[in-house]
Length: 428
Ligand SMILES: *[C@@H]1O[C@H](CO)[C@@H](O)[C@H](O)[C@H]1NC(C)=O
Ligand SMILES: *[C@@H]1O[C@H](CO)[C@@H](O)[C@H](O)[C@H]1NC(C)=O
Ligand SMILES: *[C@@H]1O[C@H](CO)[C@@H](O)[C@H](O)[C@H]1NC(C)=O
Ligand SMILES: *[C@@H]1O[C@H](CO)[C@@H](O)[C@H](O)[C@H]1NC(C)=O
Image 1: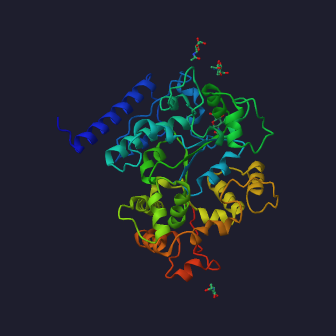
Image 2: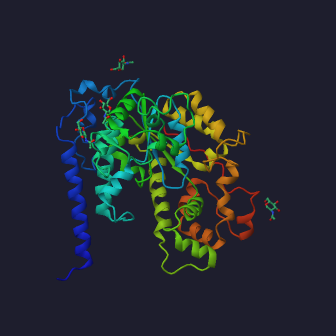
Image 3: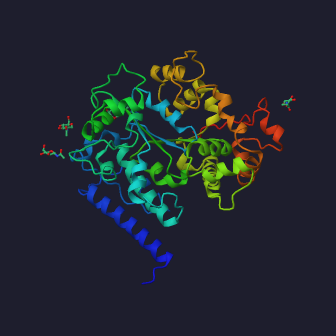
């Protein structure tokens, strides 16, 4: 039988769609719609056909069980860190994770991707993307409502009796490493290492995790698998949520350099380019261009201040955070409308340059000499690669205030910063 590549792709897509549909029907069985608090928003999502909001199975009862639905000044803030890999998002995540009243999750969309598109992980195919985004928005909605059971359908192997030891980066979430979820550590253990948490805490009980989430006033989620802010519009506009998006950007030249160091397999050809000075003919340029396209569409959307982002969007440059972590973090908390607590401040002191403790564990790139570190890519990339990046990312470099260099001398002269002063005032 002939089997053309088109047929194979079609088949793959069909199977993804079927899996996703199956997961949805399985997990959101007892549909129950809560009345919309502000009806003028119904269906305003417009462009996107969004399924109506579904209640998770946990808890079961009426809508009144869910205080986060009520719209008033004291309701939960649903914080979303929109980032891309190697842009400093773990650091930003920690700034939220350390807050006593925040329940933090590190990239839950990992599970969506590995379940729905295990083979096509780099696919930019439009149909794939739609499926992935639809599933992602559903999952985020549920998680903001502290319905962690919803996540179980994406975890492999499937959790039994609502327990699992396969939650991606569980150790990055403070609340999941503390009582009552984990007895190994108490609230006094501040800097619990991610690995220690995974080692010492028993299997994760999702029921306890759900309770921990409900006890916190706010929920923060960091994601790197949604390309741009426009993809989140339906979520941002959902009147039952109170979303605040922190979009983290970084100089694409810095991202490229960091990825080359970190993702050694996927970025192998870039390393060859760097080592030989010659660009491999089969280099996957989309690994770079996609970052710039996504930033450009996001930032263009964000900076034109569409009404649906009013009060809900803040653009943060990683380099600014690296240069002045405390000040920038205060700005972030101001935007979120939350008081910054002492834990966060202590953590910044312990983990950034301000601290002179040699014992401080320097896990974050932002740590050592933060500001210089943010530009260390200049010593790692060849001028060719930099020049190429500047060509394909020209617009976004300009928009974000990253200066292009014209010569090797300029590139390697570190007394000259390539990060221009630029203020991105949150759209209030
Ligand atoms: C907000 O809602 C909560 C729970 O419904 C209620 O206890 C509180 O009094 C409300 N606050 C204001 C300012 O309306
Ligand atoms: C799940 O819980 C039930 C009832 O407590 C028990 O019989 C069963 O063995 C548990 N399953 C697993 C895989 O632990
Ligand atoms: C998980 O925690 C809940 C709540 O404390 C408890 O009822 C349940 O038995 C626990 N599950 C397991 C498998 O230990
Ligand atoms: C580096 O840049 C500074 C500031 O423009 C300049 O004064 C200096 O001469 C440059 N150094 C080299 C080695 O080019």
